[in-house]
Amino acid sequence: MRKLVALIFVFGLAIVFGHELMAQDAEVATGPQGFQLVKKYFIDGGWGFMSFVLVTLIFGLAFAIERIITLSIASTNTDKLMSKIDDHLKSGDVSGAMEVCKATPGPSASVLYEGLRNVKKGPDAVEKAIVSYGSVQMGLLEKGLVWIALFIALAPMLGFMGTVIGMIGAFDNIEASGDLSPSVVAGGIKVALLTTVFGLIVAIILQILYNYIISKIDGITQKMEETSFGLVDLLSSYNIFNK
Image (cartoon, rainbow, N blue to C red):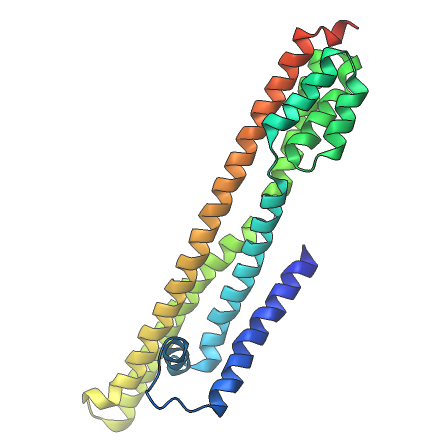
């Protein structure tokens, strides 16, 4: 996971700074459009401070994309998996059912494997193994979410900090010039508003991805619970515990 996050981070930085360098060499006669407009406002907000907001976006996206990819791989066709397990348990072939689980990726298959591994110890041992290992799998599914939540909180906080710094700059200009004309304070107020806007945009993007990841985890968890209960029912219906 760390390698993937690092690669995405480097790739994101390469895109941003590569586009920046190309844009400096190319003149846009029609004025800022699309990315050029975003870049213009980003620079107007103060490159030194806005870079912190950019870093939160890049790191947040890196962790979010890593989680989405991992959860997509972890998603298993549980109906097909249970059908294969059912075929083996009908004939009392617990070892064959375990091999099916071992060959199937995803947390549901791992939990079922742990349950089948404790069949000889009785139904209580199977249920205990399923619950215990299910908790382990839940922890793995939620790995990295705390970092995404951190960047969601940091982005608007950095934006608001930029707002405060911009307002301080505006008042410094007023104090230095002794004038309250709009031209004196406009620059500081503009910086203040831009940092807030970009901080909120980053937080909104990451919050949407965070909620999507949570929904994916909830779906996988529900399937995992359904298959776990289904396994216990199958073992009981075929009298596997009594063999």
